[in-house]
Image (cartoon, rainbow over all chains, first blue to last red; front, side, top):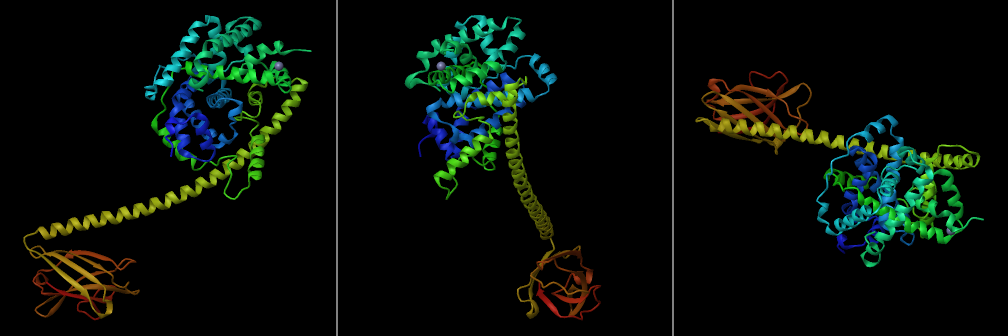
Length: 192
Length: 302
Ligand SMILES: [Zn+2]
């Protein structure tokens, strides 16, 4: 029995597809803190975020056989599942509730001890630094799109900026981020 | 004729799930025939996923993990081959399952399909056709979800029923243990009295496996009798305890057994009974008797 903590994401997902509960637990232990942090950013409610987190991992359990590693990284697949469920939940919530919670104070930064995972803490630091190198406008556009789940039209309205300008910034921001992360995340060192 | 360059913005926005409807539709049409742009979209999605690390991580409460792992048992996996199922059947089942789920969660089916459901607001004519397809998929998904809910509901009901049975059993056991504990305590108290006496009674030919222990305080007369393995008393009849002092039986308490033949009775032995040398249990009329009339079931001496 290989130690699940050492196994790559792809292998773990293959085991999950065969019904291996310990592989699902290993994926959970690896990513639940990161995903819950993201879900909280999108949903602004800890209860909703925990709820969606549970749904996401149940979906991983049911759907692991659909994951095709030749078409994308496991981490990308997980994050995409989590985001799309969270955005669906967000849109299902009463608009009034949403406005009220969204304007509430940012949740306090309850950083887990990162489950003592120095590797992922390092990856987070790399992303944080890369984001700091983008212009303020680019960063804002990217995070509104990714963490708030807004369309370009919605971002333009929120920022009171022309749609074309917002699109250009968003794309430029993503391309620059790709350049900044290129050397960091490719090859054997790839996190995702 | 548009070229790759015209889709650069749309690709980036699609990777962030931030493209608008019309843009997404045009891109989808192009992606269908352009492997280069599909590869670019995948690469951009990997970059976008890194943004997940920009949010501060938050450790879920430990109960969430326990709840999830418990829920796995009740959650059927799709695309998993059941024992005895052929590879072909498994693949066919998987395809059907993907269709029902409208591509959500699969990185095989276009990610954009998943977005459409949540983003659609305007019903232009082509959008309406998409809408009809999406609606049909939603109906399928809802039907599948209803069946799944119904199934998990029945499963939960039967789980609940067995939990409730187990709970009742536990409660009964607990009641029994409490009774035994109280009995043991009382017995101990009785035995700690300076004039404590015990008498073991054994079954007669009428009930050879029956046993009983009488514990009493010879000074106060406080007594308890615990009997096992007595046959249930017939209707209108009951067991009665007798104290035999100077060869003469004195009447004691009247009792019946539970379904398993157990009996427990408490009482006070009258003063003349406290110096009894022998004890007996007979079957008598339900109201008891002044002197023994029925068959003897247990007997013993101090
Ligand atoms: Zn192309």
